[in-house]
Image (cartoon, rainbow, N blue to C red; front, side, top):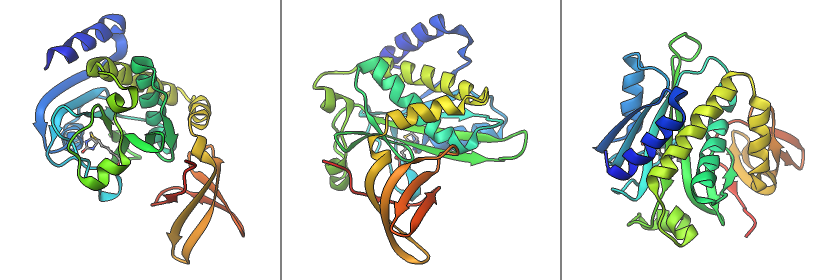
Length: 261
Ligand code: BTN
């Protein structure tokens, strides 16, 4: 493991010996999601974290690719074995990643439903959750986190919509400190969720998501094109949208957001 990561993670282990993180570093992987999902199938415990310096087949939500050039981002997946709180798990992870970035760098990104982190409307980080065996004692969720650290040779369509910690802050960033802070917040937030504290997590999510209320959105459903204005999230983490005919509760799917400039 590179020395910048070793030092920050050793500090974390010393400060929080009970966090039970099992961190595995790889110079290159197709996707950290596959590594964690395979380990989950083999019975790995919660707290396994697989980090890669580069991913050759990184993936995002809705079948999109996640560009993962070497050293340009933090790319990791975290194994959770939740017994409850599935509905708000990815929102909880977004709150935790945001809090870790604030702690390590001072940069307070906006959350955009369901789990993007934005700075000035540009994507800083994204989260992906892949669940297996839900409803059984072996239930697992691989929580994938991609944080852009520095500008990279992204494909043109990504470059237009992306930012990075170093671009937003205008200075170098210690990626080990970011990883350690994000992992600490992730472990603590998931423990809070497991302890039944979804209310506090939803409260934190709402406070960090200016687009969650009052933003025009468009989407398609079987009845055709739809439009409305965001009206917050409910207690199960669904997005509420007011339309001309009533209120819609959106749990998944692709939305077009008209964010305020
Ligand atoms: C999104 O916003 O679409 C989610 C992006 C998630 C990317 C991370 S990088 C680490 C992990 N491995 C992957 O292949 N994807 C996630």
